[in-house]
Length: 547
Image (cartoon, rainbow, N blue to C red; front, top):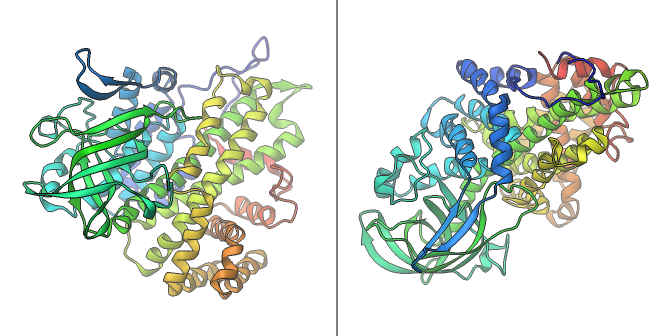
């Protein structure tokens, strides 16, 4: 970006009214590589919308004026409503209009996945809370199709690009959102210890009906029009159900919101604790196979975590570049001070590799190719682990570029910094992701060999990268119990090797060489900027953000 001139008090004006898509050459290249050029003009429109001052203000207000829980009406009736500032609904409307709630499931083209990924990547940079109910809605679509009677009712509402905020029964809605309820107080990620129960209630126009009694410790986005919920039946064990806010007869369902979580970040979005008092629901999938059913939804949302964390890193980099190019110290812009140039170059490499990792993974979701299936099974939890983990430190490093100006709520970095950890925790923390990588390999060993063979083909001319592939092969050959002790080390090596392979295939040669030279340097990692793999770090910065 061009310099904006020295402020009389050496203060950097807010970054606003810029185009997130037009200024991001890596994202543009990833969209083209995924075959989604047909979406180019729409992504340019979205990029301008996301960077516009009015959108930035709405994002701020949605997080400043937080959702409020109202459990009862003035006359004492149970209403369990969460009320939002209008800015929240504006951000939800933008997300819905831009395809984040449904694009890859309503557009049959394989390239709809990277097109979707680009929109989510940009939206997350500006307001992440609204992505939670929106991406869960998208991820629910293939699960709801398992119940044809219900799908006939909800499919047109899920396909809509209009945000309908009204809290009314589905029959009167123009569109709906769908959340999920899996975890309970006693178990967290160990959903097999769930105690919520479902009793048969008969069969109705939406399928097999059950009455659900129990609780959820994290019930994401309670104002969604329905939720996919895990509960145990007497005969089948853990089972997946669709539980709407309103029953088909127009009465309010017996879902009682106990309180909203007071979260570190993601404050525009409401997360809650709920109790079910014979709440009405219908069966999704096979009775007793609820965990495997809802894990499919989690796979899609894990992709979204990798995409949005890459978005966090991109926005943090852009803010750091904007600030350092327009803040002066010792007669030069901060960005031209050698130690700062090296730091920013290292961050630019990290952001680019995170973008390629997430966007390439998104492109593989639309394919039935054997390599793409293997890649999805193994790399999805690895990408979720690595991008989300890296975003936490990355946003803190970008905040430090601002100095004291980064540590105040009137600047852009506080909310971004607080937002970053949520993706590492949501849909499985780091240890869970690493174990899921190992589980995918043990269940489908041929997938691991197919993936490693592909990485070896790319690495054949790069000794540093080839050595990493060799170490991955040796690790996979270990007994499972030995490999589990090294789960984090293995997943880190896998993620870095995949990123290096993607950079080698798709990035420009200078960036790819710098990434490989730095990421497999023994001095890289503990402190950002210690090694950026090139003697010309300024060249990486010139390519990172364009007018």
